Length: 542
Ligand code: AMP
Image 1 (cartoon, protein in one colour):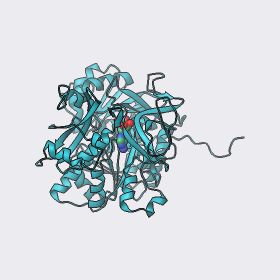
Image 2 (image 1 turned 180 degrees about the horizontal axis):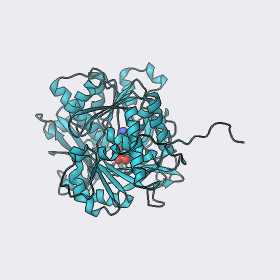
Image 3 (image 1 turned 60 degrees about the vertical axis):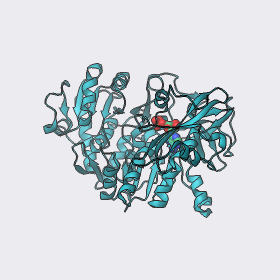
Image 4 (image 1 turned 90 degrees about the horizontal axis):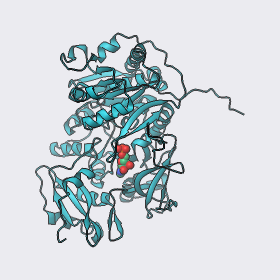
């Protein structure tokens, strides 16, 4: 017997329709590539996304065809999110930080038909367009009068002229909610990038779970600044969650430096922001140097890589901002766990609460997880046993795009490639990426733990720990350190800093000072590059 409730497909178009009808005046503010601040709202975004849909229909683009974007966080990108997916096509967000060869490879693999790009990425498009075999149309996200005259890109048109010729009346099509809606390639460090193909259903459910109070806690009272880019895992689903709740959106455009982000946080009265630790590090340095305070920011979600304890202390204790530590991955849309406290923790003192908050958090409804040993046996949730972290749920990928049977599935569970512990309350703690964990004398050393201690030193801007081959111990950790501008610390002083903070055998054998730690396309440390940089390095006394 079936239930007698209305059957409505969970489509992305319902999100922008809802925002249009119920939160039409809620603002969408963007810092543009042009440098100015642009003000819009959900009513206008909805109308213009319908113009996008009409424009794609006029070109007879097929259902499920891919439309690529190469764009910062901004209102036009948001309109494309809704216009492309809502009309039944797939929005394919390209990561501009990848090498042009990789971008060309990805465009061809995805068979993108249209490529929309911010003018800052014109040089990338000029470098790749002759190799993009399937792209028939190029759209520059700008006004007509800013369209470069001699770009060399065939048939280049401006976004404003394109949608300006279209009606804002449009009936969103109704179709099966499991149809593909968006595509994002993982910036894998080995092999070719892999496409993760989200569906309407997975996106809407993920947005709903992401908005829960124990998750990102989104509401119509929020002013949200996602620093996390829309070109990487849909800015953690925030554009969808914001439309679903009617939250104000503030987009930073290309300006990710501490000063620009701080100005936007203040001028738009942002109370919630989301980003990876490297971005927050730039913001905090700016604030320390200029002796600034936040007047409205109340909470921030930090994920993408482990939040260093020193950063959590700075946000919480110095600036009064609550840090939500979150974990996930491209293959998970991305939210898997968020670290919000339970009722029992409210009785604890601040120090004990912080110990909990520094874990990657607990599952949000929809994601189940477990840790297993090398034989696939499930390990206990005791906060001590660590093993491969496996997940499942309606917004976890089942296989990669055009790579049949490719996903790392074990009995229906996706192997995340992370190594973790889970405690009795369900709080998960990432020990390491399985390929980064260091094996010394038969014992594992967490590179994240080693990095976190270095990051707490006042002279250290960024630190990355890697294992170096050792004749006796198999591997020993060393720490590569980028110093803060104007600050100094010696090798000996930094090694002494570990005393009492970690077991003796987990203290790195050496410190290597570097001008910069290599960062990947999504702002994460690229340890493979660092290993290449240090390939001639020899441990002292070996
Ligand atoms: P990506 O798919 O590029 O977003 O990368 C996902 C990977 O980033 C995960 O598998 C983790 O290794 C890492 N990651 C994400 N969030 C965290 C976190 N809060 N702490 C530690 N590692 C994280």
